Length: 230
Image 1 (cartoon, one colour):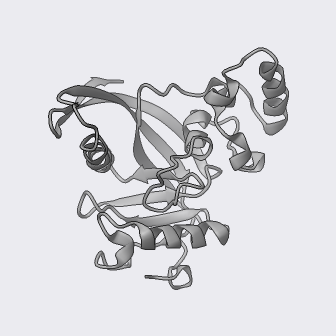
Image 2: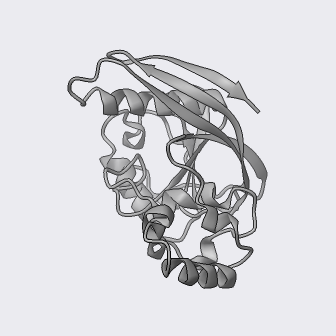
């Protein structure tokens, strides 16, 4: 497995990338309603007195330092949600104990990545014959300064294994523990394209909704289509 010390750091550059989120998960209004950490703390404490669903909405906010939340940007909740609503099953660069914001170089790449994981997840659900899943497309503007560049690593390296994430988990943990803001790496599901695994949302400048997409399950994900555009 490649070591973080063998990866070069990316230079400062403002980039646009893409992401899909399930439309059943709405934006978290509390993150978008405030301009800084002080306002967030005040509003959070006030809402905690009257909103019993607050923890479910905001997630485990103790998992991310307030200093890393990009308050005041468009779509702050979209940038922050992966770090407070952590998938315990993990992902390519997370063992499930911390969150990662995944972005893709094109919307087609994001669709390919999500389609694969939806296929794998729903194939384990017995008795599911037909279902329709709707996703919200997001466009993200961020700075990749300081991120480690794994695009030079051959796709034969175990961090790119299509199914076994154990080596990628170890790399992800080393990157996070070292305080690196993230990784740029090759998409495993869309040849020739890149993805990013951000270990913090603090370098995100904006996240804006673009369109809605649907995926149809009929024994597998049989189609993925745009259903509305902004």
